[in-house]
Length: 144
Image (tube, rainbow, N blue to C red):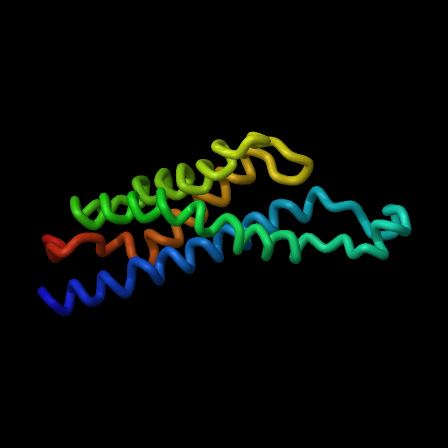
């Protein structure tokens, strides 16, 4: 029992960290379609460095703490009630990714990120968390 508790205390944060990285990797992949070729941009923008990877890294450090609070609540619910469903973790990931954008003054749609992009990132992040930590949620062993 104590070993399972220790494993859960290690797996849940590891799952969150991997889910955040997977979500932002998805965001970086989805936003590259909105980028124009460098040759078509004005010289001023090219000189300033039009690089979305820097923006994605900045968003990672700014928004990960905002997503941590609802993610912690979702993980605690899954752990307390031994919810091992992939659907729960996918929906929780989508809600967790959506909340910082929904609560921001600017709302969802911006020049680069759109609501479907954000929801897709949350779905990927929730699925990654389920793969790492969600399949074995809770302290009760899986019944065969």
